[in-house]
Length: 205
Image 1 (spheres, one colour):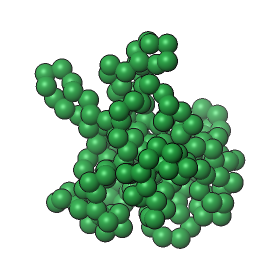
Image 2 (cartoon, one colour):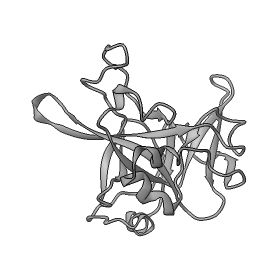
Image 3 (cartoon, rainbow, N blue to C red):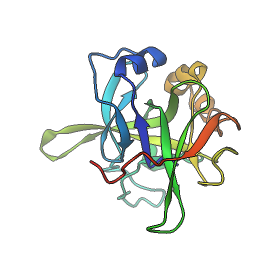
Image 4 (tube, helix red, strand yellow):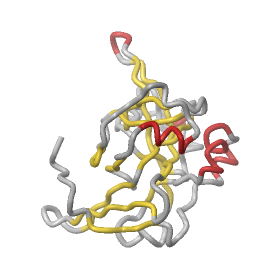
């Protein structure tokens, strides 16, 4: 389940791969992207924009009618189409070069980098929402969607991001809920490389 990821290539290359308009967007290489930060996203209009990673579900309630208070950075695919907390959200894609997971006990954790075995990019399925903050500020926000892990990552985490093949982009962004739900499955075994991340300072800003 992605809690950190990396995107280190120029935005123009990302836009070309996604078939999206970069709209003049640019950012430096990022080896350590954390929740709460602004990230590159494309929605059904196929225009890249920056959204905050983490949905603050202001005004949303759970099945018991109680307010949802926690910030959501990952939404479970098994419930994302059904939970009242996600009613009315849109769908988006988060492009990455890979992500990180950790194993081990506190202060002795091992960081693992997960990246595609072939190609340079992965496309995370995501949901997007717009928060109207006090004072009139508008914040576009996004959460990645997760599923059961593939054989490549099951030993390091019990969840993984839903990864989309290019031919599935339009289905996820604009298709029916049933068609989008069918895409929420583990990435094929043997498609990812898992390696120890020894060259990343996770304490750096």
